Image (cartoon, rainbow, N blue to C red; front, top):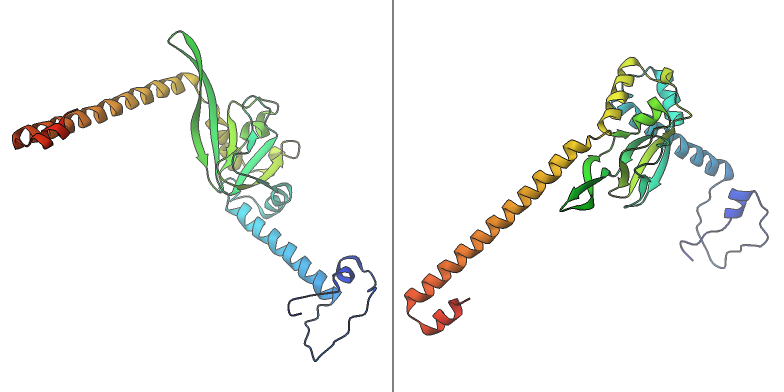
Length: 242
């Protein structure tokens, strides 16, 4: 019937056709030779590699790399896909290498412990959202076996380009790129004292917002009560009572 196909075994596995296909009426078919099929696959792979190379060249850290280093970087950075909510790196683990966001969003989090009301408490703090072309893992590349002070998690379905720290060599980057990598590494060494200050500021802000909402509601209730009393309508006065 229209849309049906046959002969895929010959294309994929170079196998013989073990049955006869015969037209029962006048028909038209589209043919695809093995050579054309494999050429299309090669072209598709080359196009994907070209797209990846263009993307890698657009990452600020790699933008000014010499062509030969850029090609090497493009070869080492391999795509990986993660679903929403996946943890790419847990706090306390050793970073395996460099992550470059290609598509989707990642969030950088830190679980912070503090004492409140005489009890030990834990809060997960949001530090940053990483978008396409943002990078994470500079510490792993520069300093080796350091434990991560943050958690890297997929906020959406995400595709990253990943390079293992064992594949990295400083000679791959220019001095400017190395400075950017060092700056990137410093971003994810959070100061817990500053985070604790932020935590208490956010608590105070939440209390202030709740107090404001409470005052607004109270004022609205008072106005409705006053309006009911001034109307002199018993039914309205009854509805206005709290």
